[in-house]
Amino acid sequence: MGLGTMGAGIAQIAVAAGHETIGREVTLELAERGRATIDRYLSRGVEKGRLTQAEKDAALARLTLTTEVADLAGCDLVIEAIVEELEPKQELFAELDRITRPDAVLATNTSALSVSAIAERAQHPERVVGMHFFNPAPVLPLVEIVRTPKSSDAVVDLAFDWAESAGKRPVRCNDTPGFIVNRILIPLLNDCVRVLDEAGVTPEDLDTAMTNGAGWPMGPCALVDLVGIDVHVHASDALHAQLGEDRMAPPERLVAMQREGKLGRKSGEGFYRY
Ligand SMILES: NC(=O)c1ccc[n+]([C@@H]2O[C@H](COP(=O)([O-])OP(=O)(O)OC[C@H]3O[C@@H](n4cnc5c(N)ncnc54)[C@H](O)[C@@H]3O)[C@@H](O)[C@H]2O)c1
Image 1 (cartoon, rainbow, N blue to C red):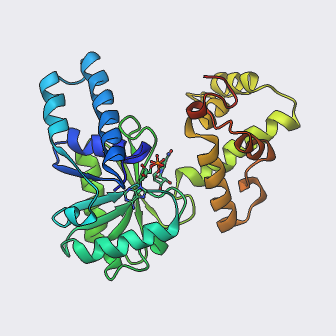
Image 2 (cartoon, rainbow, N blue to C red):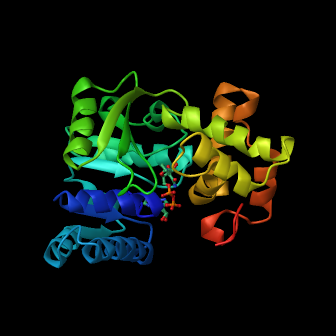
């Protein structure tokens, strides 16, 4: 559900793993854009020798596009990656719960919302779990399999096994704010950004310090640029609202960058120019 940044990546993982996949978007134009993204990434894989042209063609042929939620009625697993807002997600899960088979697993890729809250209007919340992929989904191995107090053991195991068989590295966690990685990474990145102003350090020097002194694969400023300033600010606000610690609130510098439209790589400028 949703073929944006994350949904297209997740659909790519599914078709590459051999699963017949239906991608639902709000318009066919957006769905086609998602398919084009997958096509581009798979083509790059062919160029780099990671898969053959025939494997790429077969993978793309497993993807069907639709704008109708009803077309997902026969699915074994639905993974939702629509906008990060509670109301549309709740509405969607109530509908998915009505139209899919009772044994279908319903998963959300939410980063910062409560999975329990998303499942609130579903009649069968025991079949709802979180499957939290990381950006870019086809590249980063981790998937957090998020259990709510109502998720059944069988559903958690199915989601875990699906991710593993698709070549990912799943871990189990609970429906707590930020799950595992974001609970740690969001306040940590906020600390990094605050250090820029508190210690009068440039983004270049901060990134050089963390890559060369702490062994980070990428500097914190480059990472926030990649994630998107707006996405990071939104996630910080959500974590701060849930846990209340000051360091979880987005630093003023990031809020100002968002106001000025400096959103990182996607807008051409963040801490760096692209
Ligand atoms: N971007 C990230 O780094 C990241 C990482 C992990 C998880 N997430 C989560 O993944 C989800 C999607 O994020 P994204 O960055 O891909 O957003 P995005 O804006 O790139 O994509 C969302 C897509 O969903 C579509 N959409 C909206 N409502 C829909 C509906 N009812 N049915 C079908 N499609 C619908 C939109 O048209 C859009 O194309 C969010 O919950 C977000 O928190 C994002």
